[in-house]
Image 1: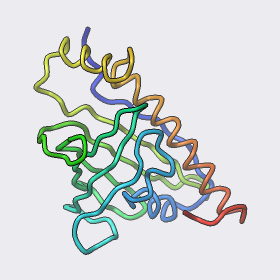
Image 2 (image 1 turned 180 degrees about the vertical axis):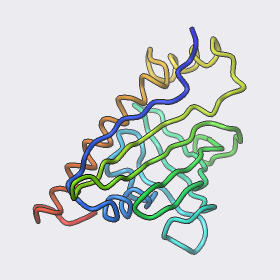
Image 3 (image 1 turned 90 degrees about the vertical axis):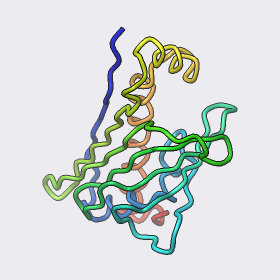
Length: 174
């Protein structure tokens, strides 16, 4: 079975692209929306996103916990934010390798923002049969592409709800 190497989904959030970008480009905030991510620790002094920024993301799926090392590859305010995941480990990301790339695009649409989240499998060197077997074990029966479709949908729904509630004065921005 040939692997699906990239999946994405979009939603419209009724706030300006700059507002959505400011939240999504803060790696420490992603845990508020993602079903797996539990936040991140930015390495270095600067906190605003920039190309080359390195952060370590904390993640959980069921009883499994792991940490990833990521490097920001795009930081265009109000337009695009992306990072590649290039190391993984239980407590510390000690195992290097191409894992995945995450990208967020922001497009102004009638005073709101079309947010598109994309996951790309960077494990190009893995044979499809091996990647599919690993994926099914790690996700309890799914390929990573199918699994990430659900994660992306959940993340976008939570992001939309949080930012629109803040806009309406129902909740402070995280």
